Amino acid sequence: MEKYLPKMYKSLMIIYQEVGTEREEMVTREQYQMIDGISVDFGIMQKTRRAYVIKSNFIWDDIGSFASLSRFIGNYRGNSINGNIFLEQSENCSIFGKDKLIIGFGIKDLVIVDAGDVMLIMDKNKDQEIKSLVNNMKNNEKLGKYL
Image 1 (cartoon, rainbow, N blue to C red):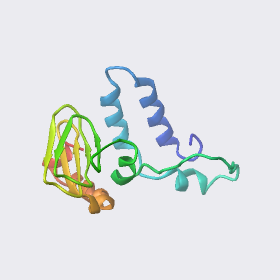
Image 2: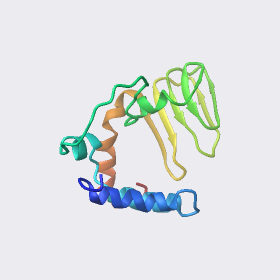
Image 3: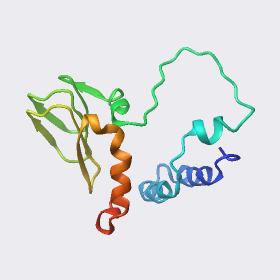
Image 4: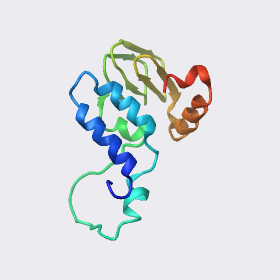
């Protein structure tokens, strides 16, 4: 990473130095804005000639979507939940709470994310379109500050 993605490497090292401090969240937000959205596959693996494949026996999941992240959080009545959540008559939802109590009643196939100053509520099937939404928000003066 240091060789092929030096800007990303520098930002990650700055974040690493702040892990566990009161500045961690602020520094992470600042540095994340500067990181190009390139995957390790494209940024490093397709460029290096010094990569190796090692056979192993473990479960892998690329946590690049809410759908994949949902597989790693608690299950409650057929819903994936994390945080202070209460659901009734709800199915196939992924809910990521923070501080607030999130109540779902009669909902289906939704992703709900409490990010503090922003609440995301979206159809679970639109998971891969979130990048487009974020790009549209970046171009809006009033909304860009929330990213």
